[in-house]
Length: 411
Image (cartoon, rainbow, N blue to C red; front, side, top):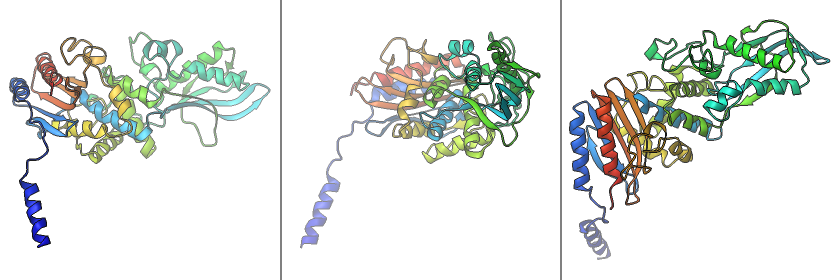
């Protein structure tokens, strides 16, 4: 009899209405659908209310699309996970020789650790506010008692491979990125005004340290060149990059291709001991897959059209990152509608202004916007609008209308 009573109770519970979950607002769905129809057959979208876990809108959400700079979401999420929010990238001066009364008898090796912000004091202050500089290294060597170098400064970029670009540029230097190197100095620019690129980044950086030493009265006998530090060297001075929190912000806010590609190689260097684009792309894709966000990645910036994922999977990444310790740093790195980064001039009025944070993406015939909106109701939504086969200017207007519609939800 007791078992029968339990069965009746269970059936009654099954028949009872589920806990009230608001159905998607028909007006919201209609607005989103109108924009997606205008975006054409090669576009997709997915929207989820993260507060209650309900899917709000689907539109060809399971077809992989070109990500463009939405690729940086995958790159920076993996970088934060691997290095931690306070992780840094170091640049070192190593020596193989001996000190005699202020004279260093031997060569100095300037070895890069993949810091995308390393450079001169004047350039880094203007570009980043604060970063590691050759002047700091020169001061540290002076403080160590070195007054003269009987040898030369040798630039060592061996922590990365020697490929200067990614697949979109045939692995050579891209005009949209600049030369990649583990010993990048001033972003690989030939001068601080950016009128050219360096042809030999490690030698260029070595020459800048040589000059910084000379300005402090430390004479270096021989001319700088590129090379690899041999075993048995000792660290004489080192400087660290800004923390990873700042590096991902520098990458995502302005959609900086150079920083994103460097961070991707840094992932490979950390895990495999050698920084490569292909190795970093596999690691970033593997990290995202662990979060349920399968993707096909081939670079860190999104310049290659080979970077693809579905809107559904991009939202999976956004939702999963919200539950991770690195979320605050990642969220803070995204452009804010109407305020900064690549969204500074978009959604400057309306409910989306300051309520939406998202990563933009643009290539020829490609436009993307993926991120978060906090609606007027207080609920947080994650969304991904991946539009292929479109005119980007028109596509951005559609995306902005969709974000405004999400942010305007009041219940």
